[in-house]
Image (tube, rainbow, N blue to C red; front, side):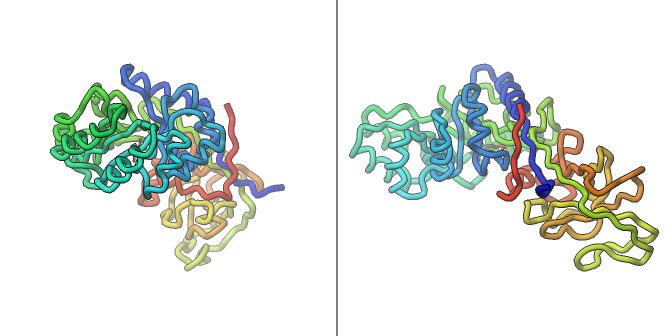
Length: 355
Ligand SMILES: Cc1ncc(COP(=O)(O)O)c(C=O)c1O
């Protein structure tokens, strides 16, 4: 029998989530963000499954973009951070990737490169609306556009920006961000990520960028809002024992039983991407019933207190998160966000797909 750990991905849930996002803004096209191996869900599988529904796909690097092409994806692919070196532009031309431009050095590379070729990519010009991570200040945009105007035949760039606080819809920075972006918005603009799509009115967006919502993660403090979690991370009990009061469990003996306890050992650990920071009491589902993690998460195994469950056996199913036990809730017990639970899943976790 193989190790029982598997991440099951429901492709129908992904399609549902994409359709739901599209309904939020019927005017907008939707870019499906599949960087970081589609937030752990498997980039090629996810992109191919959505190729006829999404208008384009977003990745973080040329390597991720090439993986999609090699996997057979024909749809447009946007490099969300643009190129990391001038040399990457030749690859972008061969594959007709779209590129974000967020800094002067990228403009220099582009202008130099485009003077040697007829290729005219769709550029997304990034504007810093207050996150101060990437992008041009709004008042620098006119100068950048002036530089682009020297390149004959260049398609009008998409103006893009990124919310810093869209997951907190009432955060005052959201309005500030919108007000900084408004003056440079054109009829080809893109602001909303998932939280923006589901909580901030951005009707002027002609492109919306759907990441966590595609996977049925929780985009904002307003909850799932009809999105369906696409991933079930599932394993099984591989050992069971009864321990006496005063006995401890796991590395560092961080948990000590105060009464007789039944402890199940399950096949998943931090080398699979499950956070070592998971606190005592972080829930899992054993045969569909919640039970708490006790002791430290180790590299390949985790220990769970199953004393209160009616009957448990080696081989019983254990779910780490799914639509019943949201990754968002588990993440909170690990002082993190569901993005990291998904994106952190390592290569040794087999992915299995269903429609
Ligand atoms: C520029 C950009 N747009 C969109 C997204 C998708 O964000 P989310 O997963 O919150 O929808 C990301 C993700 O980090 C991003 O960097």
